[in-house]
Length: 139
Image (cartoon, rainbow, N blue to C red; front, side, top):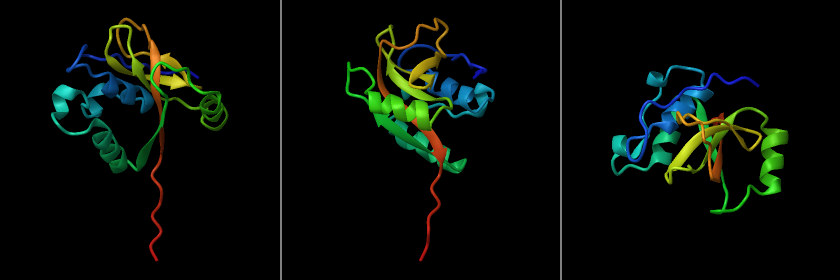
C-alpha cells in the first residue's frame, strides 16, 4: 500500500506536530486541514479526548491498543492488526530523540515517520485504529 506521507512542520516537545502530520497522512489531506494536538497547542486538555472529539465530528472513533512500555507488540495484537485491520493505522511510541512520537503504521510496523529524519520509533506504546463511529441505538 502506497502512503502519501505528510512531514511534520514543527519538531520537538512541546511544539512537535507529528500527530497532526500522521492524521494528514491517514486522511490523505494537507496538514492544515487537521487540528493541532501537540502539548503547546492544547494546554491542559487531554490529547486523546481532543482527538476523539475531532474524529467524532467526522463520524469516526479512535480505538487504541496499548502495549506495555519497552515490550514488543504481542503476537495477538499483531495478528489482529495484520489480519483484521490491514489498512494504515496510527502507531505511537518513543522516538530516537527521546520524545513521545506518532507515526503511521501498517500491520503493526512503522510505514511512515512524519519526522524529517524518518528514524521511526525505538519502541511502541500503542496502535491506534480509526474506526467508523458506532451507531447508537435508541429504544
